[in-house]
Image (cartoon, helix red, strand yellow):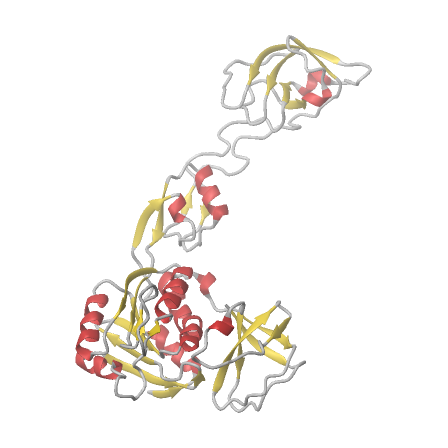
Length: 401
C-alpha cells in the first residue's frame, strides 16, 4: 500500500501491534508510572483500629453532659497513649485517657476531646465542652475495609496510587512489563554527540530525540545504535533487535536515493511490507513492515519529521503495547493568533504553541530539517490537504504534545 492517509496508516500500525500481556513484580517505588497487572484487594482494614483524629482526651461522651467553661467536668486521667502505642485496658465512667493524634482509642471510649477544650491536666483533667457519642472519633476501616478492591487492573499508578498501595502494606506490585523498543539510525554522514565533528558530517539528533520521547512514553529501550549504510548490516541489526523487542524504530534511508537502504533491508529479511509513503508533511516517506511478528516503523531522517512521527504514529502503538490510556493522543480546537502563508499540498503538521484556548505559529524557519525552532513548542497544528494558508482568528485543529 502507498500514499495512505494518516488515519489509514494508524489503523495498519495498530493492526500489527500486539498488547504486552506479560506481568512482572517490582518494588513499590519502582511501580510509579506503571500499569497495574491485576486488581489490588485490601487484606486488612485501614486504619486497623479505632483512631484518635486529635490531640486531647479519649473518654465517654455521657460523662461530659452539661460541661461548660464556667462549669467544667473533671475526669481522672488513667493513662497516656501516644501514636504507635496501645492500651488494652477499658476506660470506665469518670475516667479519661490522654491521647495523641493517630493513637489507638482504648475500649470504653466513644469520643475524643480536643486538648484546647481542657486545662491539659495530667492526673485530673478539667473539660470545658460537652461531646456527642463518636464525635472526633475515627473508626477502624474508615479509609477502607478488608476485602475491598481498591485499584483495578489496568490502572496507571501515580503518586496517589503508590500511597494507597503503601497504606495497604504492599511492598511489591504486579505490573505490565514495559514495552521493549529498539531505535536504529542510519546515515554514514551522522556522528554521535560528543565526537569531534569531521568535515561533511553532522551530529545525529534523531536517535536521542526518539529515545527520549520513548522513555517519556514508558518504553524500555532494548538497543540504541547507529548502523552503517549497508543493507546487510542493517538487516542483521534488525534480526538481533527483533529477538528482544516489541517494536523496532529506524530513521533515514526510506526514500529512493542510492543510500536509501531500508527497502532492500525489508527484502533481505523477507519481512512483510505493509505500506510506504503517507499523505503527510513532514514524514511522507514512512515505511512500515513486519519481521517475524515484530513491527518495524522506518521514519524519514529529517529531524522534524521524526519529531512529528513519534507522537503521531508511534504514540498510538505504544498506547496499545502498554495498555496505557494516558498515552491516547489529545486533540482540541484552538483559535489561531497569527497568519501562516504556506499552502498545503498534502496534510501538513506545523509546530506551534498553545495556551489551551489560542495557538500561535512561531514566525521562524519551518523546514523539515530544522529542529531548533521547535524549542518551546507544545503542540502541532494539523492542516488539511488543499488549504491555501491560515489566518488569525481561524479555528485550528491542535495535537497536544
